Length: 114
Image 1: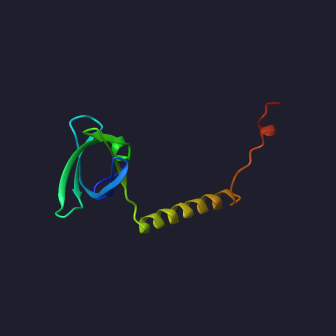
Image 2 (image 1 turned 120 degrees about the vertical axis):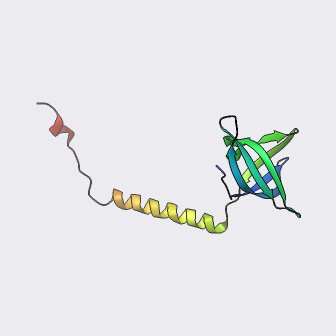
């Protein structure tokens, strides 16, 4: 889910429309809904407040005045590289644990009642 200070790309009518930064996320009176304060990167800067549910913050489409809108979190190349490195390290640790030889083998035939 997109969160405070994330940069998002807003798709309007299934085309990239504009970039914005999430300035604030405040729970709405309806459970599962959020008041999302966006700083839109235009000249001059503009502030919008949208009320969205958690699925829409995750990238689900919704409409405004009949126009399809979708919010997509922008991941910087640096963050993408960091995420990939962490995934690779996790996989390497899991492989090392699997081949470490510290596993105890339990014989099922020994456990059977005689």
